[in-house]
Length: 392
Ligand SMILES: *Cc1c(COP(=O)(O)O)cnc(C)c1O
Image (cartoon, rainbow, N blue to C red):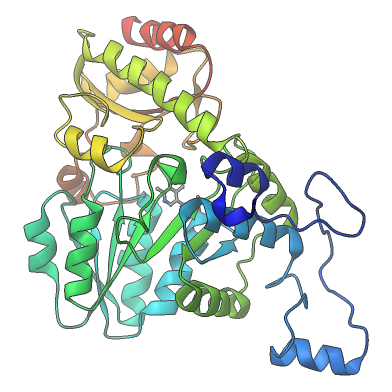
């Protein structure tokens, strides 16, 4: 058998590791910043690119490469470049594919820091962003200009779990000579394969489910050899937000259990969503696995599971939302997600605090909104803890 014939769970465990002469079973951590050449001619050949091989860990490290090959295999991409964080991955795509005078169209409901990057920093380099409602294909169409280069979408979105039709957006992008970038953080390749649906580039925050245990900050870009293996590789090599070998090792060990974890996260989240839907203090629950979710059918078709993140609006605005959060005792009050530990957060005053009030209204970040990233504790305990918060 060769790696190319392996199924997803086998790739997750075995892809990308090329055993060294020490015959190690587990993947080794190469804690070295540079690599030694046999002679001056070899050094020259490595630097010119005539001979493949390790040079310097800003852009070549064997442990990082195991993670890259494994994630590329799981996403079905030709190439992956690991980055220091998810934001570094998104920034690398902007630097790699946008120039002054270009325009990008992004779904409005994206990770808060991504909004800041587009709105505050890209504009300084003469790159404009139009934000659109991710479920409204007509508004994507209307926003495209002659100088549009990228469409950027996060699906399901954070924190409202809206689902975009990746195939439709890919067709739209390609009809206008644009690239479609999908932030696949919430689903991971265990539940959604954007490249198979037509996307050109995938970004990940490895900080979330890829590690899955809240231990590291990391990111990645996945796509074809030319765009990622050369273009993004070159950007990271020249700008420096590299993933460390230790973080790569943690993330690649995380990948080994990815599909088991994503299934368990999804099962727990669906059970919690069903429970919350029937609670008298709750106005609305956002979870793609509920048949009441506006894109339930699309989520069923496009994803093989609904993921671990849900949000809900409590009656009573910010005061009640904070009271719910403060009266839970097990759930961790932290903005992180994609951890085995369940986390609870108030988006309007944390992850989305830096966006304007107007944008909050437009994106549905209500004062009573609470996001729970459902972990892998017993669902009975998660429900009991939230009930304690809601009933306080
Ligand atoms: C966390 C997150 C990011 C940013 O990743 P970092 O690793 O924190 O830089 C980007 N997109 C989504 C959807 C995220 O949840």
